[in-house]
Image (spheres, rainbow, N blue to C red):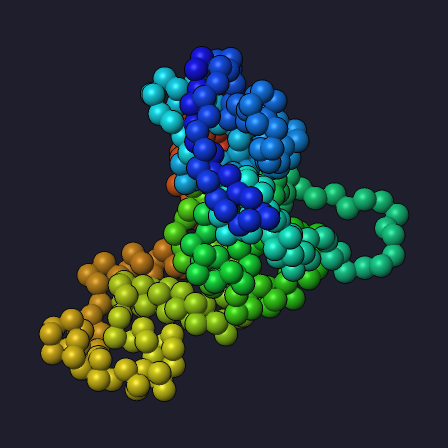
Amino acid sequence: MDVALKIWRYDPESGDRELRDYELEAPEWACLLDVLDLIKDQQDGTLAYRKSCRMMICGSCGMRMDGRAVLACKERMKPIVDRGHVPVISAMGNLPIVKDLVVDMDPFWGKVRRMKPWLEPGYDEVLEKERIVSQQEMNAIHKEALCIMCGCCVSECNSMESDPEFFGPAALAKGFRFVGDARDQASVERLEDYNDEHGIWDCTRCYFCNERCPKGVDPRDAIAKLGAESVKEGIDRDMGAKHAKWFVKSAETTGWLRETELVPKTQGIVSAVKQTKFAIGLARKGKVPPPVPPHVAADVGEARALHQLVREQGREGAAGIVQGERALARIEHTEAAGARRDAPEVTPGEEPPKA
């Protein structure tokens, strides 16, 4: 098949960027990585990009196609050619470009190391036998353990674009992989660290990381779990944590969000007083409901019952976080087939037992 594509080239010596056109013949089974190999072999040996396994395992070949992060070894070219589309290939975002499609991963790995990605079992001596962890306990961190450190989520992270110091979705997903591990004894210490100024609550909740993750890790869900675990452990010094807590409290007590109390509950009384003039202006325009008496939803009992059920089931932390849409779709499909997704004998990658 005849393949056409454009590649953003970058010369580190001159600092110049140039969009170059390429046309070549490629087999119908070719993926983007195959096409890049053909270009480098047959047309331009100076083209720089990373690759290794070619099986969506190593995470080396992350780059952008038409502005979205992809793994080059995963993107099949035939559907693109059949549409008559000419894709534009460029380096990943939010990381310094070294040359062409190669980015400097040092900032990425530095943030991963900040998570202390190793178990802290809480003992120094060697046990006489291994500690057996149940499948159900491992299922709690199964998605996060799937991460291949490709950086696609980091490339698309809006928070990192505005705050380069933000820990980032990949690092925080790795963080939950250990916070959620039943064998780790340093979860609280980890959460204290992850609640840093550039940590958990700096996420804008755009969900681009979930959308672009090629392995279904859903990093935003991992960040939400870290936030829930933080609140559960009483680590709520950040304004984001206070904001989340008030949402929950307001919904539980009145069945809806009491916006007039949101600022003082989240930012504190002093900050609320400073915004009095702004609040009065909103009130004059009918934008602020009277704070007293608080409006209570007609079916507030249902909201309170739901919160009580969550507490009774022990789902006040990470266990109570609803997964991303893709995860929910998988759950719905599984349950429709009559499977028990919460069964302790469920093994990731295998068909769950029937109900």
